[in-house]
Length: 239
Image 1: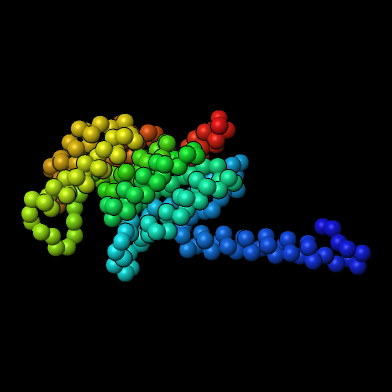
Image 2 (image 1 turned 90 degrees about the horizontal axis):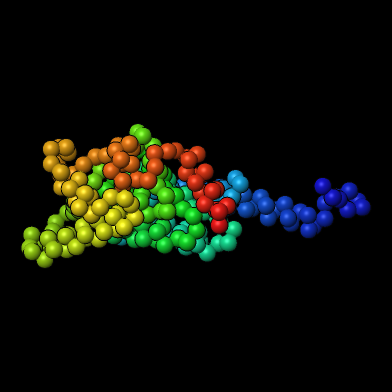
């Protein structure tokens, strides 16, 4: 380290060190608060976004639940697209689902990122987590993960009238269309699995483990973290 004639660091050198420490503290606080890494420090700068617990939308989830707040995720995705230092996006999912509108909005944002992107399903990618799982350019799932496909549900009071049922049908069509457009599964097959009876105790639907999710064409590849990162590095280096 360079020093001045008195053997002490210059103000500029001290200022540079302070800036580095402040940046490290900022990144640590960001990781603790948002559960995401601003930029990984490997061969390429990858933004790691985690989607865990329940996807929270316009209404706060009950206290004590682990949530992913969509208003926190939106600016992260904008930063990924806008920041020239970020070269790729990795989305790690372990979610039970949650707010349909919020989940679908985030899936559309991930699909709109122009940089190389990958999703990795760990544990679970259920319900509205499915559009998120297929939204990147390449999707991965570990063998022990599961994905639950079921119709759109609503908690709380609703009006039992034709207009309400039509709204649910339209919402379901949006989800089905998005999944079919971003995976190798057809709309018809997705609806078949969604309306399957005899598998879920309190609902209709289907639970897919990692291998079956790949076999059905819902997820691109069976693999873990290393596989997802290798794909991203390769996609970045290929331009």
